[in-house]
Image (cartoon, rainbow, N blue to C red; front, side, top):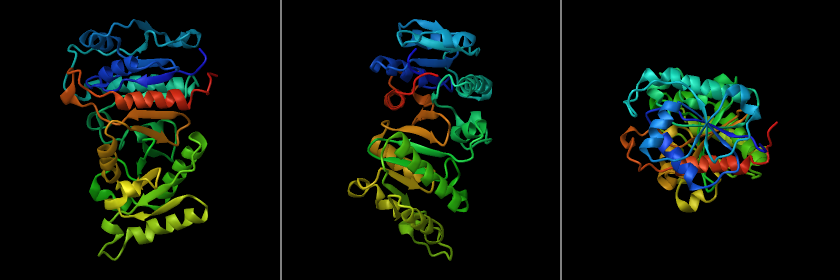
Length: 328
């Protein structure tokens, strides 16, 4: 095997992920071998359901380095999970199974088997159960990473929220200089070192039109000094920008990344603009972690109508960008 495989954890078993995974495999040929971590039983169920004819290449973890993997078959590490029906209502009964899948992937990464990782969607409500705001934070803790950023990446325009899956009423109290500083720094490093681009960064204000009748204005007191600091450090950065006009075509073309203060401030417009043509990259990790930019989507289970574009983009990003990183 010339190149490190792309490790994929299928995530929530009652989701559209395996459907879009099958479609992604059929869409194009990838140079990096793909290694799926999933229940053999669930995989077999859904292959039959969706008429997938590929052979399953069942792998033993202890022998992984001896395999010459390719994508002619579905390369699988089986994680046991007993589910009587093909699809069931999402609940916490799959929590241990998902944890076991993540553990297998994390152990492989820690043992330097690969530095390319994709996880399928999970239910934050049932799986994370308020212990973490999102998978980004779970993975950061697993690898003892204090600084991280959630980058929703599209080649034309990417976005990053300072606060992630945080209720709106807590946002203003969590707008801190240190948080904004570290996100800007991580984004700048990622674009320069990995993508070889000097990024044009725009930072949105928290308040409408960056104004407030309140005595304390976060845009003036917190965001503006940070922008000034990075401008002095020769970063290509501007702000605070009024969020209601930042995504207009004539304005967004001036930026590679727009940083917002909260989740929906930037994810709503980016999904409106690009729909499934975006991927979620976690910055700050010692490896590249990506997830498709959508959830389990229970309403579409088994209908064979789900759009695989975000997963295709995720695999393609890892396949192209990290292709030269050969297996150790």
